[in-house]
Image (cartoon, rainbow, N blue to C red):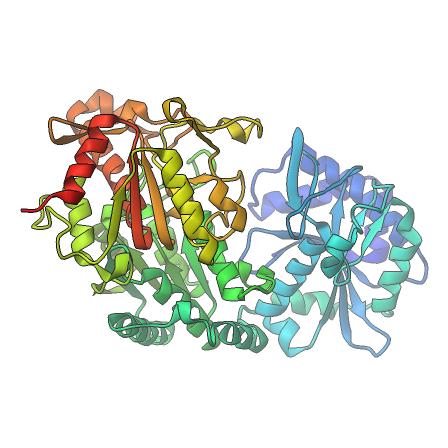
Length: 619
């Protein structure tokens, strides 16, 4: 979707008449874009005046085209400016310009990220060269016209208010500035030359082809994904994982020309739901289907992107991974396939304030010819989680889709011990099982009397493969989020202090420094480690041998029970039953993240004694 596209001569006329912003705004309103803020309108007024100054160069063809706010396929991102025409060899060519009004920028130690003042405070944001390059790469990867007509797309960034080039061009960012050069306030002449080097002649068809290109993954992208998977043992399919995978491929092919298809795959912790999901993403893309991996939590998306890239830059595949609220305004059947991991974590509404869209399940089903939902209803850990098999089936039937249901049974985590999972359910009071003890269960469980000792053991084990972490129930406020000098999890009687996982770091599970922090349910669910150390807070206690929960012990900064107030007023008993399940499911999920061992420390002494008794109990 394109908001504005005119010949350079006409664009300059709109700029000089100071009407460019109103032209864009009027078109956006007609096209039912999101609400436009005053700051966004001001940015058009400001930045496009500078673009006009650059394009006033007479050697840039008067009949070249200037296009503004082009929406990138499969994303909600928009390109600021595209100058298009033909190059010296009369080939279709376009320069993609990312505009920034920043006057100051600071370096970070995060790849492709800088810090600047934005929205009232300093924030870490993508480097504009990375941003411009990633936009271009996504267009190349999914736009058939760019692929088939070999349209040359050249990215760059223009920071027209920035005077000092030192930080933005620091060697740390060289990998991106070489792909997409940065032009600052004094570089107007250089930017004009850059555009002239790529656009020699005016041509109205270049942007027309880009705008009307159909969606299809490029062969180059598909080949890259297959290459990334080859030799990566983490994504090897075993036993019924292979059966689910092949069934999904069959249904996806069937759905493209015939009846819409929905596959529901049920599986507990460690059954390989995510492994199958990532394999499906790669294979369906290789088959030429437009697909995305979907999850509510950002952590699995970032971790699997990094693991799939095998140490290389994950940027190219990042747009294949999306949040579950991304399909509010997606046209029906836009995607060949949507692969929903952790489907039990889907919400009804989307957006920061939970006020957008109708229902995420419905939106996902409507957006794709084929959708697969990997689900474990026992891992619903927040009040807003609505992902249930019955609801998925209902929305599928409403959309006229055929529904297939399968199950992943074999346990590959927790040393393959289904007995341990049953013991966890029993010990947490989720359900009575035959596994009251750990006898004959080949999985290491230890209870520590000190969180300091447990942390030391986790750090020791982490040295081998960077696959050991501490996690905790969300019973401590996230103070370090606003003040990095403050500790979050403080247990003074043991001299224990730690911070929650780094703010904004969705790769907590794989970042080497993460062993120093404590993770929570939101950064660990759906992911696996070798060893896990679980701190049980005062939201789960044992009194006289019975497990009880205390929702009021949850931190004020925890959002998992947000929304419970209404049910408390209407039906107090039902509200406490639901809160009890959420708290127990949280610890069940945390205690099943480790493939080799689980260590436990409870802040409450009676609770600690209970776990000691349960791991040594012999019937």
